[in-house]
Length: 256
Image (tube, rainbow, N blue to C red; front, side):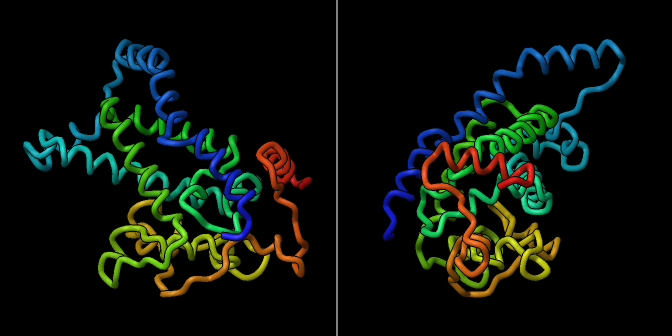
């Protein structure tokens, strides 16, 4: 690490986002509204729905196991998060926000939290609504958020760490996710200047394998966004927190 000022800004993001405090707060904040919505559904004769109750008829008794229920919820969240991530890279206005996360040229465990606040708000809102819809218990939701945040920090670490030919396809490693942050490969699918990328999975690379967005090459390329480079426009993503947030909004509306 040579630019310690950039890392200090990432640490500021970490103080804001660490352990998913905003996501957990949002989960509990919408509790009265969600209860009201469920009551209206019942009054209208509409049935409720919970993930573990839906699994029970197919595999009796398995949903009574706390570990199984936790893993089922974790898989659902990771699947949803995969498609959120595809949206962040595939929709130009959303990429305008999310590209801030990719603008860090020096990866560290703090890089996980370098996100535009609006980008995080959109992602967290979707995940909280999914959590409420599938009926996850508050304690399980908090545990999943904490576990996910910690594993995401590991995947952003600036280490040449792979999980080997087998486990590399089971869990997201720092090597796998570094390719997602690599210039070009991580944010382009069909050549320079296009949207897309590879290795979108947050925890389980199986989604990238299923939907053919995975790249399992053993390589460690420079990280960042192509338009940051001097010979590709030298776009300014900002050095300080507030400038990064402002420039993200400008990129979102096509003025950055």
